Every structure is written in structure tokens, then in C-alpha cells.
Amino acid sequence: MLAWLKKHVRLVLLVIVGLSLVPAYLHAYSLSGPSDIPTVLLGDKVIVNSAAYQLKLPYSSVTLFRTALPKRGDFVLLHVPNNSRLRFGFFKRIMGLPGETIEIRENRVIVNGRAIPVRDLDPADFAWVPTGHPIGSTVQNEDGHWITFTPGKSERRNLPPIRLLDGQYFVLGDNRDDSEDSREFGPVSGDLLLGRVIATFATGPRAK
Image (cartoon, rainbow, N blue to C red):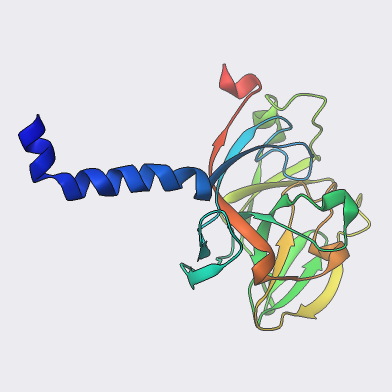
């Protein structure tokens, strides 16, 4: 065993360093709001990779380099300045990218004049969602993720076209009737994206 360790000392050191850095870049959170039901329910756990878009010096705010660009559909943790209720960060889905024009018509997201594809789902298939976590009467697959809303309910179901500037992103909650997002506080700067959700863990009926 000692001979193997001597031969593979580099590998061993890399593994040790890698394991020591995991807590600096992977963080667990518990969902406390309804804005992303039924994708995640209240109490569900998520794992966020804080190095998904930029690598920072461990346990600091110093950015070393960019690792990737955010993509449409990414489920992210972000921070909104000057918002005392959301000062610790919250979760939304990126729906608009820099340079795009975003519009919403009756909960349908329009990007550069083209509607994002949706497919109606049977709300009965979501009977596992607890009654305490109400979803809308409509559930759809929106380009690979679930969204829910009740037609005509939300005051923010329509939004005139907004042109995103360089470095700006438009974020929405999957529960379109009950989400504080870019429809209210506007586009967000890329430096406010704290990380991307890479795993979710159910704590309710789905966990059984």
C-alpha cells in the first residue's frame, strides 16, 4: 500500500485538494417559496454549483475566470440588490439571454418574435403535488421543464417587449401565478447569478 501511495502521490494529492474544495463550490439549500412548483416543492433540497459560471477564489468574492455562459432553461440561484425580502438569494429559471427581446403574452414567452415551444400536460398527472402547494389549472412542458398557471389569473401574465442589454438575463419562476421575477424587478445582471442547480432531492410524497 505504501509503495502504491508513493507511486501515485500526485493523484492522491489532487484527490485530497479536490475534496477539500467541494464545500467551497457546492452548496445545499432548502426551498422555502412557491415560485417553482411543481418543479420543486416547499422543503425540497437542491444542490447549487457556485462555480457553474465563474470560478472564484475559495471562500472569497475574487473572480478567477469565467467557466461557462448561462443558458436558457438553467435553474439558478440569484441575488437581487435592494430587496430586503430576497436578500439571501432565491431560485428562478433563465428565459431570456443578452441581446434578446423578451415578451410575454398570456403566460407564453416570446423570444425575438418566436414563442418558446410548449406542450400541454394533464394536471391529473400532478396529483402528487400536496394541496398545500397549489398549482394552476394548466400545466405545460415548456421546452423541457414544467410550468404552471391558471389562464387569466395573474396580473403579470402579459409583458410588453423588453430588449436585454449585454450581460442581462430575464428570469421567471416556473409557477407563473405566484412568482416575483423579472416581470416585476426587471432583467438581472450576470454577476448576480450565484450558481446553477445541478441536483434536486424531494422531501415530500415523491421521496417515498
